[in-house]
Image (cartoon, rainbow over all chains, first blue to last red; front, side):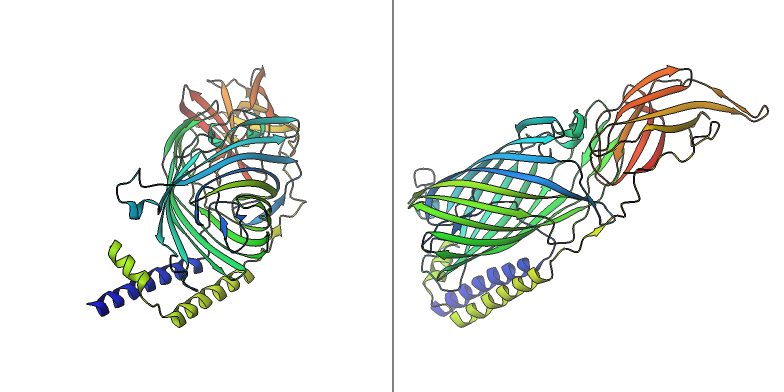
Amino acid sequence: MKSKIKSSSHLIFKFYWIISWLLVQFLFIATPQKSFAASCCGGGFAAPSLIVGDDQAQITNSISYNHIIDDVGTDSLWHKRKSNEINATIKIEAAHILSGKYLSNRFLSDRWQLGFSLPIISRSRADQTSSGLGDVAGTIGYEYLPDWDYNPWRPRGLGFLILTLPTGRSVNESETAYQLDSRGRGFLALGAGTILTKIINKWDVFSSIEVHNSFKKKYSNSQSSGTLNPGFGTNFGFGVGYNLDVVRLGSGISWSYEDAVDVTGTSSSSGSAQRFATASISASYLFEHEWATTINYTDQTIVGSPTNTSLSRGVNILVQKRWLR
Amino acid sequence: MAALFQETLKNDYPQKESKIMFTQTFLGACLLTLISCADPQYANLSNNPQKNQDDKIGTCVAKFSSGICLNYTWEKLPTENDFGILNFKTFIKNSAANNIELIDLPIEPSIVLWMPSMGHGSSPVTIEHIETGIYRATKVFFIMSGSWQIRFQLKDRNEIKDQIIIPFNF
């Protein structure tokens, strides 16, 4: 009986590892853009709206500035953007594990967690600015592969569901010049994914993947009206960090893909898929046991084979507070 | 399932196997990084927004299904920072007399600037009816470079009765 359980356990472990390896090797799926704040001293790092460490809760405030550099057409030709368009985002993200009082099974309860992300976006171009709420998201996560025995090679695995609400107006519903009042994709979307993390001595590595489906919706503005039919989108990424006492230096790459949006109505088109990749480097400082700050630089013009998208460079600064279990 | 997980954790994992799998994944990720460098191909800057090629009066650039011709010229080309101004005329050709007759469209026209690859439009365009068969569109602006369509539409409420689509590279 024991040998049966042992072999089954090996199979489960191997299954998760193979799946993870296959997912890592896929080229055109990407991660949701999450900045990674580091905790030092072997504690790894955190995705702001998900807890991937040993904490009970965390809250992250961030501000980012992105400057649009190029536009890439469906023919993959790049066009330098001559106009100066800056997007500034203030984001609040939080996550909390569920304690025994929320779930009857105490053993499973602290492996579940809830999180949310709330962005406020300000877009400016020429002499015009528009600010407002972006797309709000909620996540539920489950630690399906815990690291209780600190296995030197098996990663920690966190699965999650993410629901994105169309609280930021989509570009199709925009009514202003330069479409600055568009602050989101504008679709209700449901996604699922997983994050794998591992700390080896002073190094930490991560990989994540997410797949989502956006739901069709009707739209209307002064110029056109009809139905928008989006499809699937995926995100995939990985990265590495090195911890020096209270400082962490990290880098990562993520790939994003979105199906074409088919538009029917007064203005119809079948659209084209979008694809882009984001490279990032970051530096984090742990200035108290439970406080950390990170500065992050992202660039979408140096990696990947983008198509049908705008590319930007940006800087992000965040402050994170964590509560230990 | 939970019990199986517990047993999974208690067992002594084949660490060598785990190490091999981790190493393979890490090397695969490194390879992926190395082959991911972007190779931007910038568009030829001389291919700038085209003017209407043909502003000779009488040239029918496009025709509505009713037979009414349309011809347009740019009074001011749009740029990345400035709005453009587009003048267009609607007429019927009298082949017998070899002349044209300016004629108003049966419905007040609207112009939609549409980017088919992205599936969205651009800033709203304002149209002014100058005189019989002559219209002036202002606030013509393309929010990004790429292949666009200028859609001259005749709409009755939200129903399109007739439409001309002219491709435009910005």
